[in-house]
Length: 169
Image 1 (tube, rainbow, N blue to C red):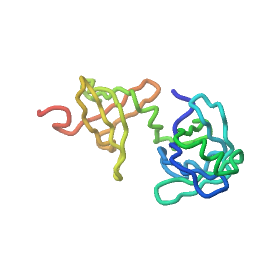
Image 2 (image 1 turned 90 degrees about the vertical axis):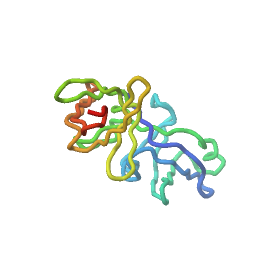
Image 3 (image 1 turned 135 degrees about the horizontal axis):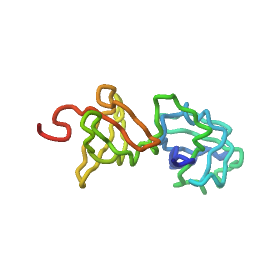
Image 4 (image 1 turned 180 degrees about the vertical axis):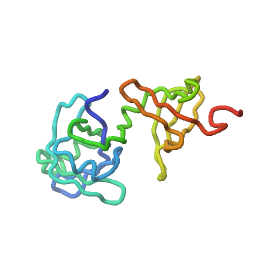
């Protein structure tokens, strides 16, 4: 499992005192607000102390103690920001997307393998797992009536698929 997880991408600066605009790739501003430190790389190097985080429409405005001018903030444009998973507690029944990517999707009753999760999307009502096998993609709603068990330690998701989801039978 990755120790440092992507939280979003800096897409611009905000005002003159070093704030940045972040396209959020996480659950939202409340997730970011719990962090005290974010990182400029996937190995946890180059930490930045988070002073303030607030939402503006669908982006986050962030202020770091190390960045105090628009010129310094400009240097972050286009950079991906990371958090340490140990600094970001989540509910017991929740999972980091990074841990779901690569998991095998298996029928809970027949043990038939349907493929691997290659992406997780959300359009409002629930997460959607993009499951790929032999270059064919199937979108699986991550609802309680379909998802039986998620075991990220063994990289497997057990499901009871709706009729016709993976075949015409």
